[in-house]
Structures are given as structure tokens and as C-alpha cells.
Amino acid sequence: MTLTDISLALITQPDRQAYLKEELSKINRRLPASVYIPFVNSTIRNYTILHIVIAEAKVFQTKERAPLLLCIEAFRPEAELQISLE
Image 1 (cartoon, one colour):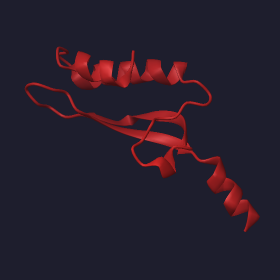
Image 2: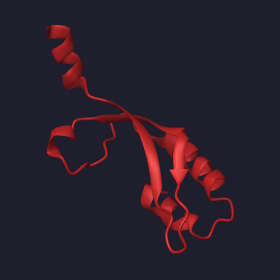
Image 3: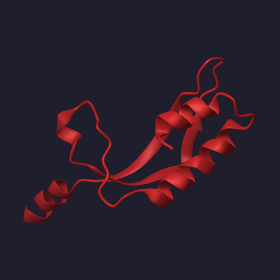
Image 4: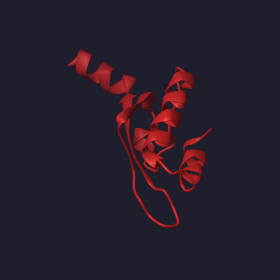
């Protein structure tokens, strides 16, 4: 299941927050070692996603949709290299 699938499925769930946490746990267990989220800004494309912080996830209550707020732990190897070279 993808993040957009979860958002769509949340619309019909009676306990949206519990369902979100359960589905994010499943995603974290299956998260590949080198996955990235394609952000709009091309300068941050090199961030590797390490983990989705489940405790920080929030579902906003609306009648027609279930927008999400997610906190994602990311790693940028280039930034670490720059710090170590300085």
C-alpha cells in the first residue's frame, strides 16, 4: 500500500489515527534501503528515507478527504561528506 492509498482508505475508517499508525508500521517494515521521496525541489532529491516517525503522524479531519502530516527521518550522504571534509 502506498501513502496515497492510505490517505484514500482513511476516509472510510472509524479510527483514522489507529489505522494510519498500523499502515505506517507496515510501510516501515518493508521500506527498502535506498528509497527516496520525489520532492519538488531538485536540490533535496538525494535524501534517503530511513524511517517514517509513526508517533508524529497526524490525520486531519475533513468530511471529504483525509490529509496527512508525516515526519520522515532522512539521510543525505553528501551533507555528511561535506561536514567531515571541513
